Length: 152
Image (cartoon, rainbow, N blue to C red):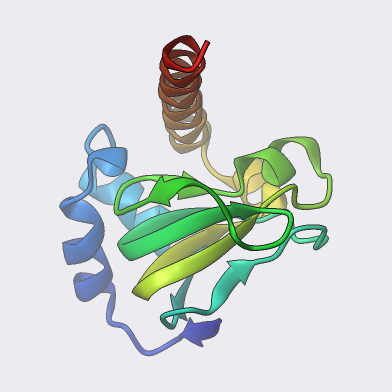
């Protein structure tokens, strides 16, 4: 993973303005988040954003590209995550080691937020991020239920 330090703020805003994850955020809230509380990373194709058992508790929001979520031997595909979706919420919320790996299907850009940064965000932004996490996790549970029902 390579930290992207030279991406101008207007370009970062242009990217996140297209994603449904940020639709409920005002322009100033998006700007505060990008300027003070997050980092952008480039993950090249076939590289990992994180690996199973790592002690990395950052939340990653996919801005561009796509990731394969893998369990155990890196061959067991659990699904794909694309722009506007997030990775690493389990370790982020519970401060535990990673239970899966995330490998880039193509060159991808992710926005990283630490638990500490989340606690320092203004309440309105923090609550919007939490709402998006709950919404996204709820959708994942619904998809999992459909999968289980279809294979029972």
